[in-house]
Length: 117
Image (cartoon, rainbow, N blue to C red; front, side, top):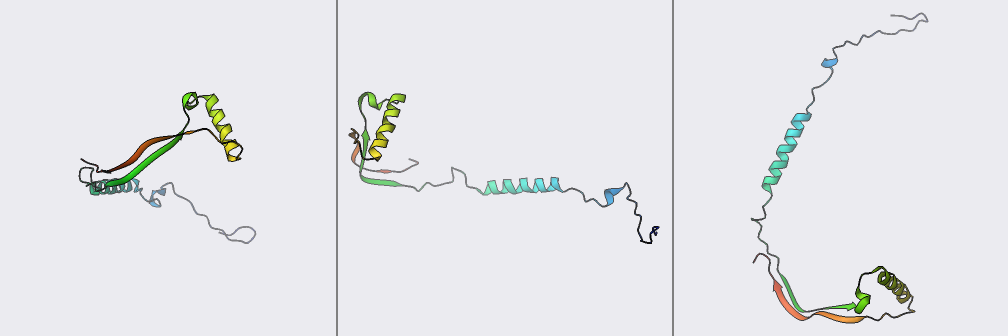
């Protein structure tokens, strides 16, 4: 058709039957495929019974020493925490040297740890 100013335009009526342009959804089949793939991957994983733990830990002449505070200073109270933080600041500035005791937890220990036995 032609407009009154001489330009042309076309009239196109969109039918209510727009189903012909739409594609059917494949969300269900995609979800099923993902689920099948998930279970196939899980089946391929070895179970805990099938794993042979071959990790072995050996240690010789192991010493563990801790610097600790004794007495009431060792208790986790708000006052002791505040005092420890203040001491840490002064120690970092090299103004104060804290009074701590050396506690030996393990002294010259050797051994082997084998899991699954």
